[in-house]
Length: 109
Figure 1 (cartoon, rainbow, N blue to C red):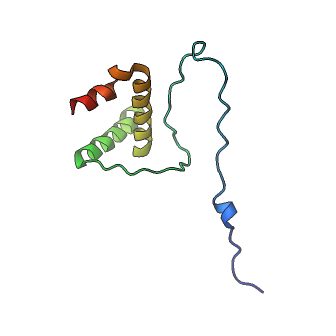
Figure 2 (cartoon, one colour; figure 1 turned 90 degrees about the vertical axis):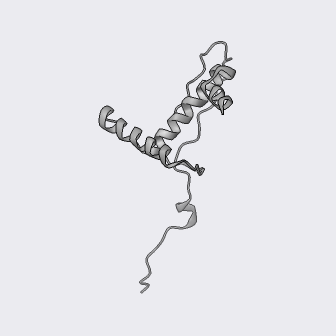
Figure 3 (tube, rainbow, N blue to C red; figure 1 turned 90 degrees about the horizontal axis):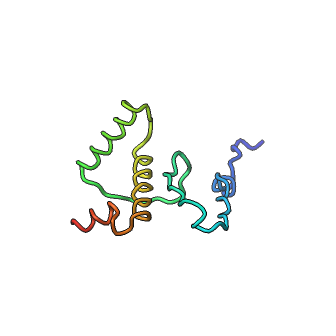
């Protein structure tokens, strides 16, 4: 009698957990308004980056998270706030190019 537990193999541990991305339509951009980016929300993320922030930036991010929860009833984590902010900034850059908030602020530095 074997007393060792049966453990899953690597294939079960590292399998894909989300569906494949939808097919891109062949409609020209003149016929359809550009699709707005969205943060990825609560999903398993496969890629990680490390971003260093100051103590003040981290405190502001945490205060924003608490404001979203307390005043708006949105229980989100800091990562979700950051992903949504990135989506907003990238949409603005794509839409407004040289006049985007990101370009203007980076030029100020």
